[in-house]
Image (cartoon, rainbow, N blue to C red; front, side, top):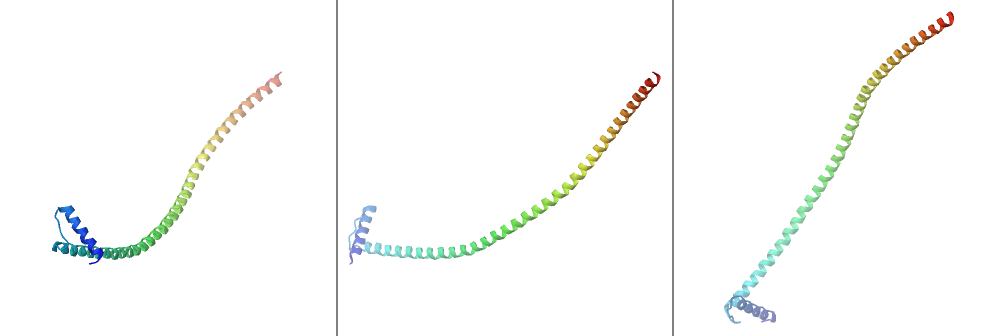
Length: 147
């Protein structure tokens, strides 16, 4: 037997005693079963680890293909977003122009009516002042002529 095998056997015997309180000897058949079981577990865990490495590699490959698809979709969405923003900006500009024309038409109509009203009021005041000046002028002329 090699030194490592002897160390394994001593370790197994010590572990069995520590856990169960049962004393085993090196030539006990249970020791052979425990060694075979340990080898079986190591092989199973090694196989499981290899399987996990394979599955991880497959998963990473699958993610890589999806990653490129997701990246492409994100780029397309960014282009679509930019197109939408341009369309929205254009539509907002057209709406502003339409509203500007409507507001200008409404305001200009109101300004025209206000100016017309102010002009009419000014003409009425000027006519009253002209009438008053004419009356005063006639009164002054009458006074000058008769004096």
